[in-house]
Length: 204
Image (cartoon, rainbow, N blue to C red; front, side, top):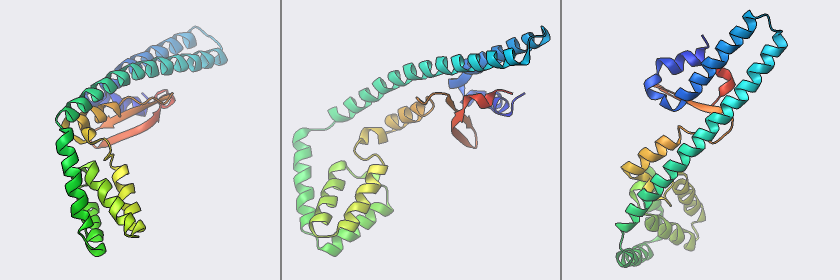
């Protein structure tokens, strides 16, 4: 059997997202075998497999999009719950305190704060905290430190803090299992995962 399909079957408990696709591929292989035993030309069998693979990929992607849409709604609910827990008034007061705090720092203290943020977990900082520090660094002419901090924060997704809650992380991880790119899937094993795996590689 195909190496990749063997891996999917070996780690079936982790790859429920492709169970339907694997069944479709198994059906295509059986039908190809029947055509071969019936003496059909190799070219006809090849065309059948290519067309069947395209349809299986199309069906899989459609299912992925439907699942992603469900997960996006779930993430929106996570965002709404996160934001309901925030008071606009307290957030404004906190922003004012942050501005005063960073304005009172020297340039060296601001750079030290930026290094501390980068060395630690940026996700433990609020978006306002990062934004105010980035602004103050830039305002003091420390654009290099400002840009480095901003890029690191963006890469961590700091503008969507609800994604970094336990619930948000779980939804994000599940969404990663349902790629929207045509003709690819995800293989997960106990030792890691392979993203962007071409579905055609699941055929012998």
